[in-house]
Image 1 (cartoon, rainbow, N blue to C red):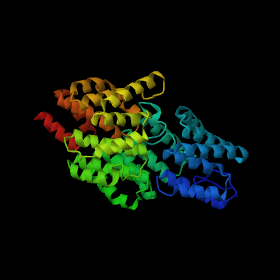
Image 2 (tube, one colour):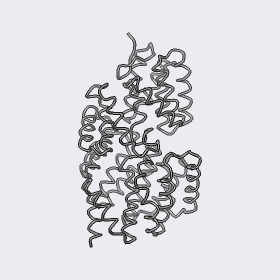
Image 3 (tube, helix red, strand yellow):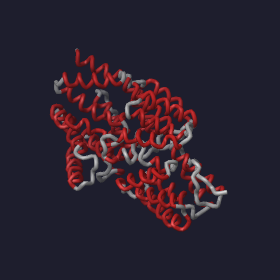
Image 4 (cartoon, rainbow, N blue to C red):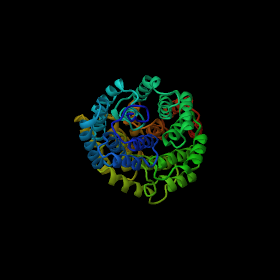
Length: 439
């Protein structure tokens, strides 16, 4: 009998043990759980020409920020799939090759075409989805809707209790505004597979969008001890709990969480999460009027400079802009702004002008030139989504605008923005700010 993957699609290996290792490895990868690397390598050891196992390993290595290793693994997958792969497997490897070698536009086109024929190819379906997926980093302003549309298009091709699709349908709906539906789906995904960091993350996001920050904090504090620190989302989930602490005006607890789980010296997460989590939490603490202990900004700056010396993803760039501006490295900030402006002219920055604009606004904010900050960034609020990431992550940009409005005497604008936010969801922090304006 032919071997199959975890969703029943045939896979080209004659080793049942290698097939089992591949199924386990892919599911561990899709749940952001430790052990995927070992399972996939075991599958390769059992069948050295197992193309899909090499391809999945390449995907994992790319996620971890190991480009040289990912390129080597995907090259082996391409070599072997030509010899013994099916049409689906050849397309699967080709699509992953585009993704792991940074050809994002072509990778998205290839993934969507592939899914038209093989919608149950779950590893390919994962590529466009998520906060850091191909849709999110495409520069689209409506990528939240695009994820929902894709999930709904393929939903009837999966079992109703497929833990992975429940997770990502839930996250996509919650991010797109259908928060109650999204939370229900994500919660069901977590119930089907508790060892699933993506589901815990999706539920926490839905709670955030509902204004249920305390529930999110309780969920994370109860769930996180069972998740190894090596898990790629460990530090990021703790960041969500720290945001909840800030929401209820408890900066000391937020700092305790940061020091234990989030700061670069302790987090084993993905570099993109370590940098964005560290910068955004420290920025919020400082901007909200709390003291940031000596050394924390320096540590974040050293880590970010080592990982992202050159301009790259828009999501990273907005955080690098906030970092340089807040730490007083304004020459470096302006150099980065200019570099990103050139990338727009060269067609190399899909998110467009919002990226250098945020950098300029962050410098103005750091210089207490709040009116200038508002002038720069207010016209671009509808473009915030183009930088990618989640709503919770992008809210820092709106916070900067809101605080700049408040501090530059533009109370009517600040009140209107706060009213829109409070209409969307309850918020202890926004309620406090609303009272400050009225006072």
